[in-house]
Structure formats: C-alpha cells, structure tokens
Length: 450
Image (tube, rainbow, N blue to C red; front, side, top):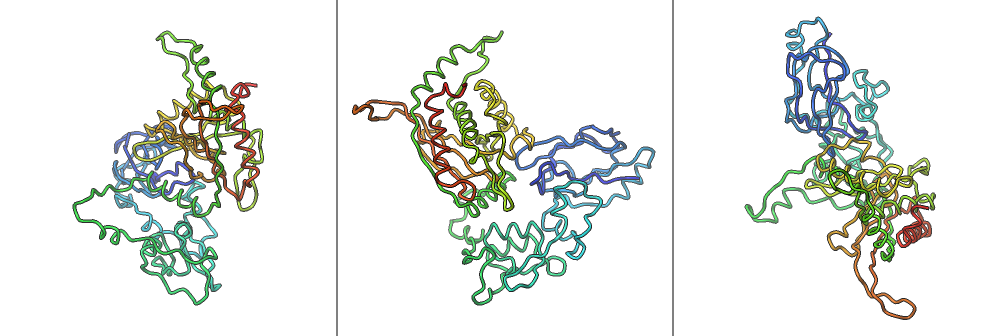
C-alpha cells in the first residue's frame, strides 16, 4: 500500500523547512537508508533518509519550495509490487507552499486532543498537532494552537483578546500576527490584567506603518529568511522572559599571550609543512569558561519552571557570524579537551556552520556561550543569553592600556569581558564568583592544564 513521505522534524523546535533538492526522481527505486532529499532548516541543510523500501511514485512538493510544514506530505512511496501509476494517481495534492496558518486550520478540534494522530511519528510534531485551551483573564476558556499561544506570549498580547479565525473560533498564528498590528483585538475588560500580569505593551508598528515613513524607492526590501526569523523570535523571547544582569571585569593577557606564542611555535608540522594547530585567544577563553563552570558548578545550570538543571559537563557554545545570520556551534565537554583539540574543533564547526552543514545536536543545547567581538576592535559589550542557557560571556579586544602596578603606571595588554546572567538561575554573588574564576584562569593559563 502506498504511503506518504512526510516533511521530517529535523530538530525539536522545527515547525517548517525548505525542500532544497530532490536526490531521487519519480519512478526511482528506493531502499531504506537511501538519501531522498536535502532539507534546509533555519540553521542547517540536512539529508533526509528513506525508512521504507519501494518506488518513488509521485513528488508532491517540488524542490526549491520554502516553508513546508512539518508532517506535510511531500511525496508518495509505492510499496514493492504495487502499481506505481495507481499510487501516484491516488496521491492527495498539496500546495506548493505549506504555510503555518493553513496547516493549523487542518489540525484536530480542541475536543479531540486526547488521541494524537497515528500518522505523526515524531515526538516534536505531537505538541503542535492539537489545540489546547488557554485560560482567559475572566476565567473563560480560550482555544488556541500551541504556536499561537507562544507567539502571543512573545508579543506580550493577552490571547483572550484575540479573535480566532480557526475552527470553532480557535486562535491560530495568523490571528496573532494580525493582532500585532492592532487588528482583531477585543476590548480588554476594565481592570483586567494582561496574560503576563502586567500592563500590555503597545503593539508593534505594522509593516504598512513603517513603510509609510520612507520615500518609495529609497530602500531595498530584502525578505527575511528562516534563520533571521528564528533569531528574532528567540532573542525577543529571551529579552522579554529573562531578568538579566551584567558583570564586567578586566583581564591581564600578558601571560596568556606569551604562552600562546610558545605553544604555537612548538606545534608539530605535517607533511605539507602546516602546523598541527594554531591557538587563538578565543580558544583560551572557551577553555577558561569551561573550567570556571566546573569550579562554580552552581552556575552551570539551566532554569526550568519545575527544577534547576545542574549540568555535569561544560558544553560551550561559540557565536559564529554568518552572512545570513548567527549560529552558536557547541564544543561539548570543553573542560576535558586540550586547547589544541578545542582549536581544531572550532575551525571545523565554524567552516561547516558557514556551509550550513551542522547537525542539530551540534548547535542546540549547551550550558553557556562565548561571543567574541574583539577582532572588530570592540572594547566591551553585552550579549543576549541563548535559552535554555543561563549565561553568556561577551569578550572584547585585547589592547594595551595604562595600569597601575606597585604604585607605577605601566602598559599592559588588557581585555574586558562581560558576563550576562539569568537572575532566575544565577544570583549576583554567584555570577561574580564565576567571572572571577574565569579571570584567574585567563591571567594564569598554566592553571588550565593542571
């Protein structure tokens, strides 16, 4: 019997993706493990492997199609011995572009959420497949999809005030987007609190309002890609939900720079004459933060509403700038890796990040992160925490400054770093303890190998 090949969920947070390329044609034989297509998520391009055998009877979604919803049919696979033409003829047609609001309209009604559809095998698809009721400020039940509730929360809008256009008046993502521009909003009851228990934020300016401020032809309109949209959503959520404080400290790089020069000079050379490694200051920063988190384990945590997750290892994300956005590949268990291993791993991760070839487990999770703008001459700055992490270290440039030592003004190579902390998980004194531990390691790099 023919089966639908569905758009896969390649990461826990993926809701839609782009079908970049088909590697099989209609009529091709397919074996389990064959690569069917290349799927672009917001962060990477990944290969989609077949799990069943048969013949590719029909391609429903052509390559190059963007924003295909997870679990939407993209092709039909005819079983062994089945009439391929009959299987293709019986395939349900699908829109070339699967939009999230339209996909939501096909989901089950709120009263049927108890049983998840059997055709949705991925765990990440189950929460988004059914609507769930939300409690309004007045105590009445408001039916809304999980995506709509999350978007409303991120936008600071009470979902009870949004008029739903889905089945039985259910609020869907399209309704939230309209509500952001002030459309479809019900009047708030007198004295009623917002969903967050605080005064409602003023709605953001609509696209039409923004465009009206500029002369036509004076700008170029560049559509957002998936990565830029995800960055905007995640960082907006982080700044709105995390009570963040910042700690800045100056580090003396004198010993580190000398050690780095000696280690690089002693690096063995391969047959091609190139050194086996070349350490950067950032490699030392990653290692120092990883060890500091082990010395202050109370700060190596992630906040959840039910409990504090205290991590056993230091998995350090490192911000990598890309032409189309930003990604933070993760050096796993950095506390036990050598500086040369960290250096070579980061070169590999950065290269594959720029080629969009990272796997989700290589950039999701992590226990803390490093964002280094020193190469741009930035002295100091504050970085936005990447949930579910509770801290991020912003690293400035190393520069010669006048400092006082033993009552004398001398020149020293100094670097300013700023630690952003989620106050729900890390208190002020604990954050100070962590950044002080980092400073001691950076200023005495020999301690990183003890």
